[in-house]
Image 1: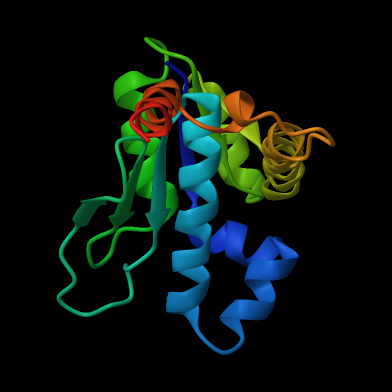
Image 2: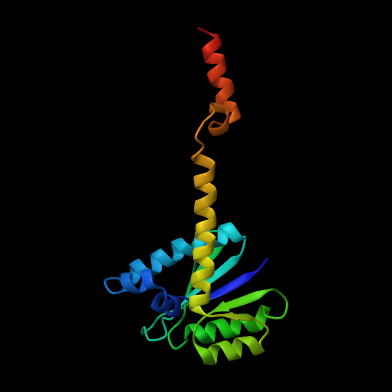
Length: 170
């Protein structure tokens, strides 16, 4: 399974929608990013670690929360940047599994590449995620926009059987 490490604030600063949201609320921007990555990870079958810097927050302890089976959100401890956390994590698994790191920090990209991970810029990742969203949207629209809906196409088989029993009992 592919694993992706995402530098959360770097992505928020580069993605247009998230950049607008952060102007009034970083928490809202973080939550929207988590929502987007949950959908993407589920669609692609990837494991994503979303890392947020808390290195300037006095007394901050590292905190990891599972947003879903596919997405974990990490807030670094005081004095540790997202870059440092990602480097350490990639050191542990970088050459044993398929790993990508999403950041537009050029120095970080060089370090990550040396440790066995594929680097992806925040904007490249944005376009990849948007493409996946369009595929998801298209498949949903295709499934539910038939011109000639037949009941059997849109209702589960067990519900159809129950409806048929009700119809026959009258």
